[in-house]
Length: 146
Image 1 (cartoon, rainbow, N blue to C red):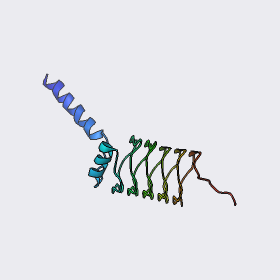
Image 2: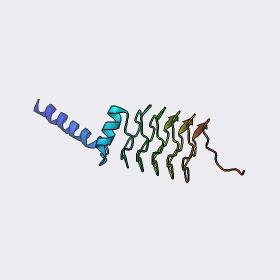
Image 3: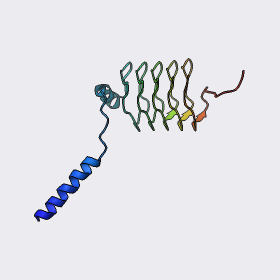
Image 4: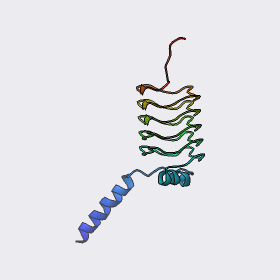
């Protein structure tokens, strides 16, 4: 009996050490607010880990998401008007019906993202990575001459 207990304890401690430790940003209160209320207009979410988050219809107007991890996040219907997404990771994000008007997307990674029916009027798109992205009915073009 003692041997079984020790084996189980050793196994559980090994599993707990191998489990990934969630990233805790200094701005965990705004992240909690966003996830609980779906609203965080003007919040400082710099470097926040929102990987895979369901942010459908959230209000992130004028929020600071500089360097945030939004990999695989669902931003359908979200309002990111005026948001700072400089150097944010939006790899494989679902951006459908999202307002990115006047947002700063400088050096944002949108590789393999799905951008459908999104508004980008006045957005800064310098250095955006759109490799493998699926863009439909969104005013983004790559290359070409006028």
